[in-house]
Image 1 (cartoon, rainbow, N blue to C red):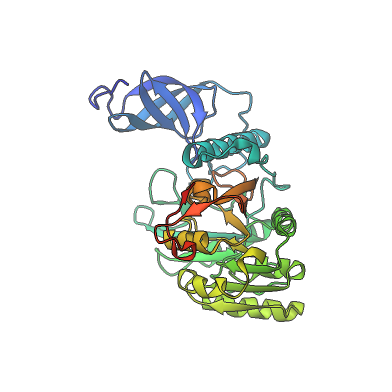
Image 2 (image 1 turned 90 degrees about the vertical axis):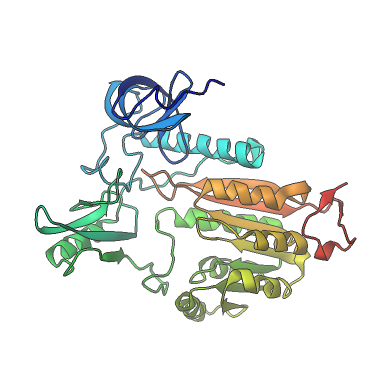
Length: 403
């Protein structure tokens, strides 16, 4: 491979480049010889003029100057702030094409990071509302000394400054009305954040606790998880990172017993209230660090009759939790993630040596117009795998070798 010295290209240079791919994260990928360039707001197949903003030895980043030959899948963005505001990456792409690109990104990641067969990956489930779907947004404020006033909006694409906005096209209409109120009654100083949220009907959700941000696709997401758990034939459910009890309570009627764990104490109190309002009595919610409590929770139910739901933060599961799951070996693991790369990494560890098999991966487009996508992975324990541990006691073995 030819290594381009960083002096070959320089910041500020302009070049014409053909976009070959769309990388995970939303940037287009082009090449100047062997030198790779990442460019936002482009589409594979397009010829564009770019200006280099950052130059490394093997790659650089650039801004789009103009589109020379446009893709037939290029559309006009609905939002006037698109390109300045950092919230969306794909408004310039036809929605059906967005789904196709996300599908390719997911399959590429799972092949490259996890070594998984793409036949286990479903097409991306589309959102019935590609715009106007977000039920929660965070408005940021920043003092602009030049105009002697507050900027009220979202962080910009290219830096951490705030772009002043009057509306958000991917937010629910109700939230756009609330944006108007915030602008009419601004905070007394910059640097503050204002969270705007539409409470989900029938659920108690504290102000800062997690809940899925897309009501429009949520029924399909729940049904997908429900279908997987029913197909697994388990009797018990452990919902890790359970939040306000959403998955545990939605699935309570198809298992004998369940337990949910969550570090957010306000969310756990809400989960108990949500269970009470639904008359659900076949489970419990425990507050605390999932990593510390998981060993005790896994002892509550027989592993061969239990499913574990993992819905961790974007960084994924701690290695200690993955090792514990490999030791205890529940019959099924349902892993819900909004970050396909960390998901592929964690699934590779869980499936190492054939201990678990990826039965199905279903992506849900909970975040249209953006780089993000929610995935639900269904892992099944492989009883035919034979393992040998160094001390010949599988229950204590952290690393296993297939024979």
